[in-house]
Length: 260
Image 1: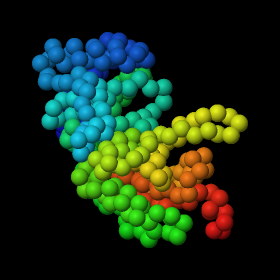
Image 2 (image 1 turned 120 degrees about the vertical axis):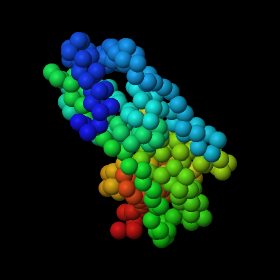
Image 3 (image 1 turned 60 degrees about the vertical axis):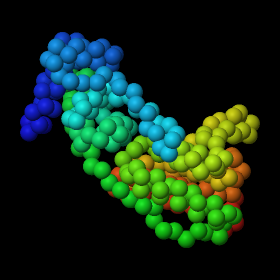
């Protein structure tokens, strides 16, 4: 950070805020105090700017970072009991991608001293791997269309967004293609009640994950849960990772048992 004078300057002001207020207060107090110091120092910034990510004419997601220094830096303010976790980095990377900024920074005001963590965002592109469509897929034409739509999203957008954003992007693309679909469909779990499932239903089921390395066993198991309670025969896990994209076809658990 010493090689980045602007980041060093912002950390210095954040440290003044931390010393002034002490650790462990509500995040909004640190935000207000830091914004006041930035304004006093005549440092150009945007405070909680709310912007829409529009894809093919439809809103895919809405982003509202704590602060944006146009052309320079995006910091996110946190008040944590533990350390930074994967969700914090995923959130910040998504902001950097959307604002086309290379440098992001997490700032934790929850400890005895301010804890800053800088990250560098690198733009990457990828394509879903070519995969043979398995025999349990009852509508091969639909499967090919869904993969084509996802690959177009990848070509247009590139990697780097969080799972909820990718779900919004795929939904926007389906809407643009005038396809019927449902996001987070409801299902009745026998004897327990109604729940919302984390997937997209477009005759088949799409499960979206992002920013890891590949489709995992957990991703496949969660998709099978969706297939079970929606009583649909097959689905696709689509993963939009840090440096590559991945997909796996998954069958209804009853079908899997018959195949084995």
